[in-house]
Image (cartoon, rainbow, N blue to C red; front, side):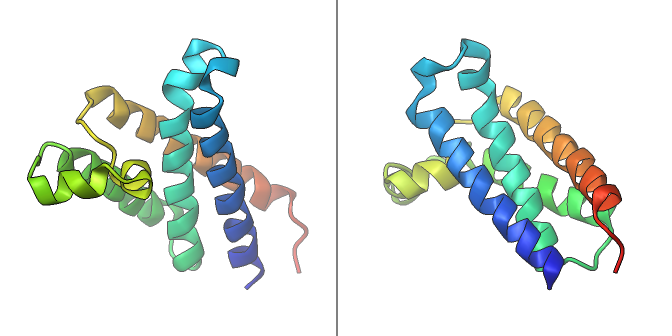
Length: 129
């Protein structure tokens, strides 16, 4: 239960950080505003997977997280009116995005890798009970 709380807190932090990067993009260097939002989103997906399935192996969480991120990115190749109407809403844009970009797959991969590294560091730093 304690691990789920940590992952849940991380999700909230990552959502706030991602929204700040999007909302205040002009205040950040172009590299940050161009790339960090997608990386933070992928970190959040990883934390969500870990929160739901805390007892699964990290490798499993990486595969599921990448499948979710990549699946949503590839879904952007589908441009039917009904899904574009969803994408035109705020939440639809944040979750589904708008157009396929190969570079987003790289950003997601890096975001998931960073989340795994931080996850491992936090586990090593946490006291054993």
